[in-house]
Amino acid sequence: MRRPRAVLAVLTALAALACDPDYVVHHVGWFATMRHQRSVKPYSQPARPPVPGTVPVTGAEPDSLPAAAAERLVNPRTRTAESLNRGKWVYATYCLVCHGEAGKGDGPISATVGGPFPGIRDLTDAVARGRSDGYLFGMIINAAAMGRIVMPRYGDKIHGTDRWDLVNYVRQLQQQAVGGTR
Image 1 (cartoon, one colour):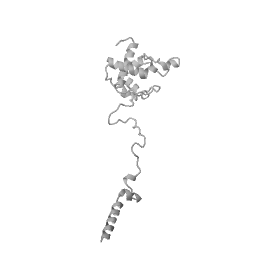
Image 2 (cartoon, helix red, strand yellow):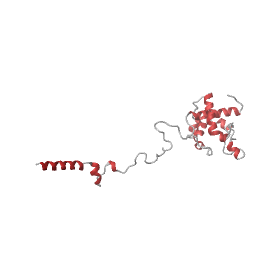
Image 3 (spheres, helix red, strand yellow):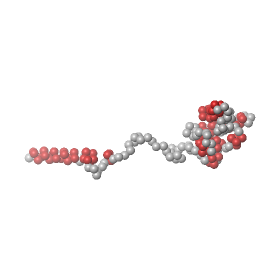
Image 4 (cartoon, one colour):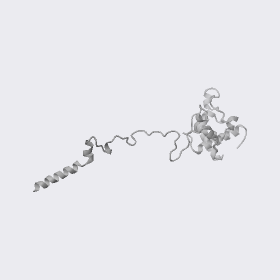
């Protein structure tokens, strides 16, 4: 009588082992499990960049503005000493190399070619002074979208209020060029 109980116990153990889906089911070709499917594992491929023009749910700054939209922007930053000092630092970091210390377009790049470089604008001439703050803001973000092909885009380098502080500093350079003080 002991023998049938032992046989029954062995058969029960074998049945329990045979029911393990990870052990048995993956051997059956027409019955796949989620574990053994073809899929992309997290972090196994480089991240894809977002589609241009999309805004993440956390919010973001635009990567370019059409000229008409830029013209309508109003500068939210007042020309305080703090704003001008920050704008001066940003100008010295990114703009001085082409536009020069006074914004005349006579920076070190122009000096290397022996005179004014034809693609570098004088930021203090009447045309630049007549532009709106929004237009200058748009030029900082992406000058090519504003029609200035030679100037590189700085929207990915200059962020937030630094853009408006730079506009304020350029306005100060323009005032100094025509003899005004502030």
